[in-house]
Image 1 (cartoon, rainbow, N blue to C red):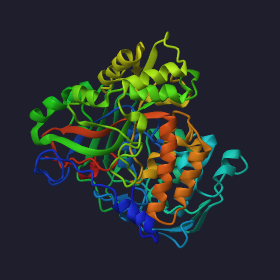
Image 2 (tube, helix red, strand yellow):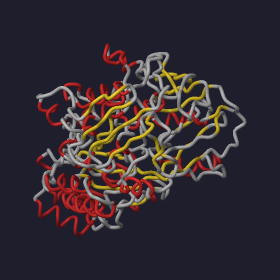
Image 3 (spheres, rainbow, N blue to C red):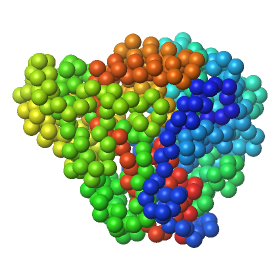
Image 4 (tube, one colour):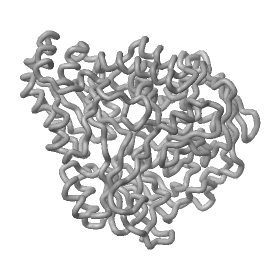
Length: 539
């Protein structure tokens, strides 16, 4: 996410501390490797898995839908490649004297794809809709800091009392408590505007959205196939699309998509299969891109399941996994063993913060025996199908068998669009694969969405359903801190409690490998692992 002009030194320094996540494949600084002879126009294609939900920003918290939504929408603020907040979105300014009462002023001239204006009401109405639990929006918890959120959850109100429209281009936001990072949070999907047509028929809208971004949907999304988005000629931003259109092509298996990329049938694969990483570098040359990522790959635990309710069980499983060996054997050494719940790309990361992430099979076995874990039943390992997770999850299972004497069963038969809904309904019956990238470059973005009660489904991404009032309290204190150092100290204290409870085991800090065909140039992944589609040129 990004920021705007603000008075908070905490926000400015937090973002300034974010590391550049640039592509390092080839010689092209843009990450493409090709010089790009295209001068605009043309159509290109991109692989994507089936999104979990209809294409509504407040209900899109996963990578596949996120890629499409962010082609269709532009938020209040953006981030530079260096992680600095930029006011090149819809907001002219986001200002506060006390980090609690905020005034948001919009730029004039922005329109939705149906020609209606992007105004203050379109933001306020969208935020109220997303926060209302009756609408079951996955991103609803991101509105939780706004005054009146709890009353909406309790059914005592239908709108957030902290929101007020002042005029067409101005609205105010009152938070429950000071939060210096608020201008960063509002860059997330949950804070995107919605046009009036959305409220007339949300279901139809989700199939053919009307956003305000560089691309528009002139046709419906077809499940299992995808959609072609076209350039929005009246786009008000500086990052107008270079191509005439982008075709999102849905594949059930990334291996099939990669084969099609080799044959020139799909232009961009954002994350290639693990087993082709080494060969892809030589085959695609400067069209092979490596991008440092904000993502952490986790092995999550269903804390609601009695079998995994004891923290000692979760600690033991984590310590029985040789992360380095899996990285070398499966990922050609491109995954860094994770030792923290906060990625190294933001201030607040501490080397070795996760004690139980260290490989120690003897200690792991002793802990498991101490817990009284039932070893007669296999451990079910859950992951989504078609995304090249089979090999490394099987490697995890083999290590659990070798180091803990546990048999395992792979549960990788669900498509991505089925996988997350099962987790939301507490359907995972064993450890599960989960990946998380920050929503804005701050340590807090790795904690609140994954380890607090208000972020449990259906309003958030806390699929382990872990909650500890002390953790929430420390995060809240960090939110209200007067400077970055104080905030990070409090977030670190919260992380220490989480690391002891181990509701999710951090496995890898992820580097992303991507490829593209000779048909396109200027291919770059941003801070959030999204291909920056507006920059792509067709040769």
